[in-house]
Image (cartoon, rainbow, N blue to C red):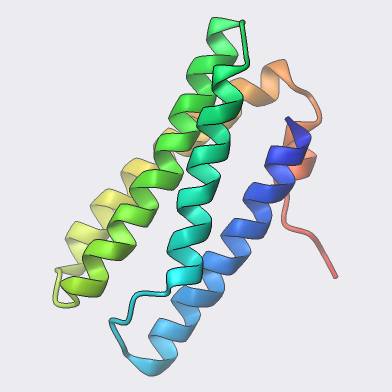
Length: 123
């Protein structure tokens, strides 16, 4: 589980860098590395969920996968609709943050090493 946390943190760093580039260029260009990373993470989380027998862990992993997939969908949408109102973007983002907090919070209770793995690396 900790390995998934480390991979998630790396994906988040990639997404944040892509978002910074988009802001710097004021572009609506789809960052395929970022979207691809999120999509791949969702796939990994779903594959891991398929190997888990404990229903609570399985459900949390599936919720976590949904966050990655919804984030990728939002980025794809925004690349095609750059004039989307910020309030709409914030609403979708807030929903994802809540879902992520719930999923990782549940997993952290069952997998004590996860919070440290999710923490951004310093260095």
